Amino acid sequence: MSDSGQKGDILLDIKGLKIQGFSDEKWHDIVNGVDLTLRRGEVMGLIGESGAGKSTLGLAAMGYTQPGCKITAGEIIFDGVDLAKLSDAEKRKFWGNRMTYVAQSAAASFNPAHRLIAQTTASTIRAGLKDRSEAYSDARILYDALNLPDPEHIGDRYPHQVSGGQLQRVMTAMAMSPRPNLIVFDEPTTALDVTTQVEVLSSMRKIVEEFNTAAIYITHDLAVVAQMSDFIKVLRYGYEVEEAPTRQMLSTPKESYTKSLWSVRALEKKEQEIGQSILSLKGIDAAYGVSKVLFDVDIEVPKGSTVAVVGESGSGKSTTARVITGLLPQTAGSVHFDGTELPPALADRSKDQKRRIQMIYQMADTAMNPRQTVRDIIGRPLEFYLDLRGKAKNDRILELLEMIELDGRFLERLPSELSGGQKQRICIARALAANPDFVICDEVTSALDQIVQEGILKLLLRLQKELGLTYLFITHDISTVKAISDQVVVMNEGKVVEQGQKTEVFQPPHPGYTELLLSSVPEMDPDWLTNLNAKCADLKG
Image (cartoon, rainbow, N blue to C red):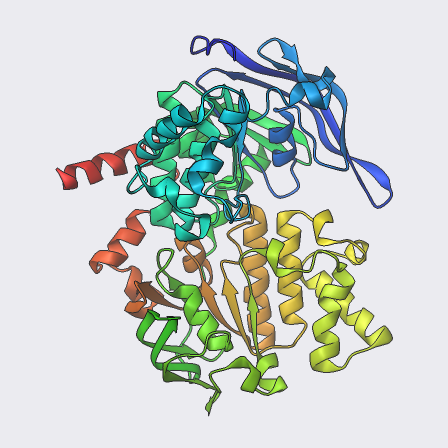
């Protein structure tokens, strides 16, 4: 490993990079002649809508292309070496050593059979940078620097024994273990609730600054990129739109496309009158084994409305949804739907009861069969619930694709051939295929960029109006709550701590936990995280 160099020296210089991907039996341009210069100790924010080429460019900075992609032109000069000209064997000397990668989904990136500390140090030990004892000792130092609880022993746990936010920080420790010159962060906080996101962002920024590491931070969250980046590059359709220092980009973006990214979160739904409840939860308790996770939960959802359920990871939001769908039978209380008490277990419910309540899951990657085409995925509920076959089924599939702003070109694609946003839209179409009355949306926009989020939210609002749908919308994004909800339920530690009309819940003064949630929502201000950390330090002092 070479000397870490002085801060400000050019580490990465990409010139005229072009990358193509193979789909629909032909090659398509993904990255079109992009230039990028990154100095030691700098963090570059890379933003743009789904399909812009962000992840492709971030991986290419490491000399890596995904299967089905190829570099067709340009240079990738890393510390004087053109990675584009190296063989895979030569590039592997850099990967996991001088350059590392932090993925979006930590849960999908860890081996469930191995302890965290063994996985944190594997690449460092394999590269011969440290022996096992030294690497383990260093890992504990990194855990402490990342504000993980019990840093001396948390590495002895398995991945399923820590929270999502803790696992994301362990992955950052894994990336920092070999003391790389470059880290690529690919949407690392997308799936985290707001309070956990603040902790992870603070930890990431601290450790990058402390070790003078250069970083590329890929995200669709503009408020997040404002906290992390020295400068921002905007991509669209694989082309560079513009680049500028963060403060300049936020205050005076030059291009109309960039300005559209800045303004999309102005969507806010006007509340409607409270009508008759279509769903009523009374005194719900629930448990996983002997561990009780819901405590006397009461929730009313008026017909045709949207009720947003917010709270930290582990607050009971998704567990409540599992009780409603019958996936987790409650241990006490009742669930009434449209005036009828539902059997607690899904297996005991009629086909029509199942059809009327549908769920869209957060992780589209794990919610679809990777071996089924889009036609199969959307067509299955049409056959099962509505007995559609042949031309009638195919026509309805095309109608559903049109609803989610896709078309017939996607019919024969597998999930692996879709972008993250496209995958989630297919999951939405699958839920709508059953002609439901009630749809549970579990963090359905968290993995989508701002423009696609706005399109999906507008689509859901239009469908609600046209079809009379009722939504239970689980989210940690307060902007999404404002955009789509009529009422808000705040949950913490398996209990409902506040609920009411949106304007009432967001109107101060707030109960302590609601205040914590609202104050943890990142703002489009580069000083927001610094000021929040200073405020928290003062309160602790």
